[in-house]
Image 1 (spheres, rainbow, N blue to C red):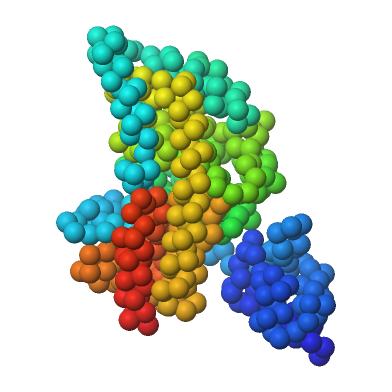
Image 2: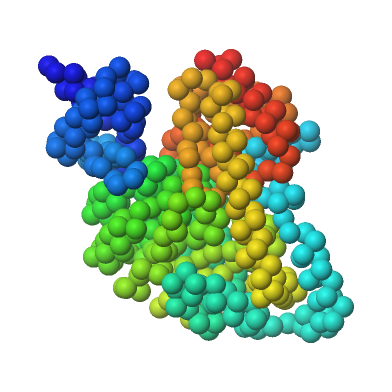
Length: 462
């Protein structure tokens, strides 16, 4: 066997044994040279052989990615009820403990928020418009805010006038109303796995079933696994965050987005798009949202300012498409409207240009934060720890080598450190050796010390 064949055989074996998963990037040519002690031409020949075998595909400027798909890999569990709520309350309590450095909760640290600018806007509103802002407003939301949101949507290629925008109490509230409108208790909802715990809690509260669709940290949800699921079971809707999903930070390629919409049309299920992080892109090329690509009327679009201006504002929005009027009626019975003064504050900040400036500035800070946090993890955690490398958002997904993250959390909290363990990102007990970290911090020294200490605690459990 020639050298390049030996290298190809080694990589093929790793691919088929799950060492490299579907849509995951292989080592570069240079990395293969170093790993196997071969020349550049030998490494290139090995990768080309894998490409000829349809195991990998070359992506211009990005390297080689696994395209091998073994349907046995997708061991899809049956749709079932989610029971994550009580565990989430326990983890949140740990993260909020006195004297604990919280590395897990995905919220912006105060130092990243535009407090001075918002204070100035709020003072003006309180002085000149307080009387009108204390009046009830029975509508889809504060008109100036809906107008500003509509403008931002048009910049993203989404044609949605102010009458097609409904203001909600955050993105999670928007998703909850969308699900309650298009599905009923007992229906099956597909989610990307690992999944944001808040979504699992919403599905649990609505009495719906969940089916987890595996994905990768590079390309997000597996369309092959989703197709298997919708062919096997009746799926009412898919809830997906195509840009920088929480917790993996994955971004779905544009071709996959189009294929997803075609699949939704063929198999007759709705898609609820969680677009919470797309404005926080820190590298790479911006991709069109599912809503912008939707030619079939399959997408309900949801977003908010929670990850850009702070979760405390609780302002989100949705574009419900053909279900918009039904969702509006549901909203009227839930809480009539969101606080008018908060809506006016967000509208004025957007209209002034302050929101866009803040997003640009914060994006640069988040990019640096994620880079540094990733370096701290790789330098202090056990060997063979794997860390996601997102191009946006502000969370990192960490895969530990055979360490139970729930056990590690208990030890960490005793040492004044908390994070989100992997078990809260699944309703079926997956990801026990994973954890999520939040990179939206403002105290670098404190966070570095906590990450380093957490790495020491993890090494002690090897």
